[in-house]
Image (cartoon, rainbow, N blue to C red; front, top):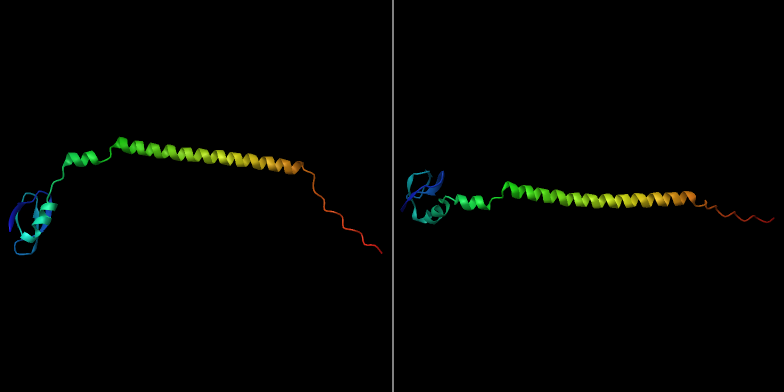
Length: 113
């Protein structure tokens, strides 16, 4: 049995009689010896400065979004150029086909009587 003070909003723990119990912020509770390690691991207030430093800032998010948009715009421009080249090749092939003399089928040989 060990006495502990709840540091979080609430913690579910095993009391000295082996039953689950809930302790609320500021409560002094008696924790079963088999649950002490888990209780102590969970009943910790995170370091707010460390957590805040690890979180992305709005600037980080804006820069990531801008980079993603720039990448997609570059891909789109490459595809537009590819499409323009294909369109130009099609127009050239169509013009060449219109100017080429029509191929006539060879006349069938006449049957001799």
